[in-house]
Length: 158
Image (cartoon, rainbow, N blue to C red; front, side, top):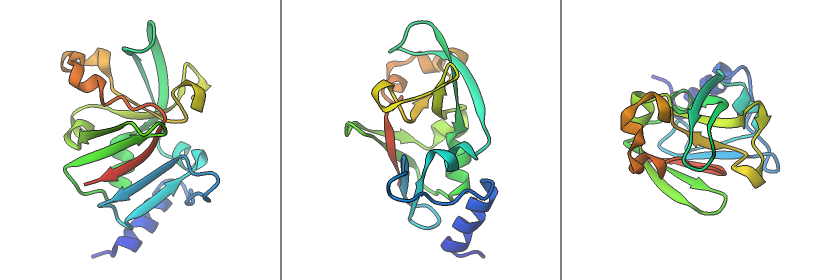
């Protein structure tokens, strides 16, 4: 059986050799019940994850948009996350609890670009949790709208 540290090293190697970010470059910190307790990522490390694109509408923008990022479940799996929910925190201190089941039931992504342009801090970035809203009638429920965290900066697995 692998130790938590060995699982984290294996996870990082699976991400294409991406290394943990230095403090000045960190755009996402993941803590809690993961292989090493804490992982910090820069944009490059997150973009090394398998990339997905999702087209959907949102309740805070007009029309349908194309979002590019990575599946939340891919990140959590690679970090050895074990828990029932994730606490997502934004740069503006918005906090929401998201059931871990959302990530297996739906292709929830953490987007770093919208319509081919990088998400910036002054426009929902650098990261935005995006649900495939248009693909599932269940996601039209307002409870899911609260889980779309823009300016995502931290995840805590519990």
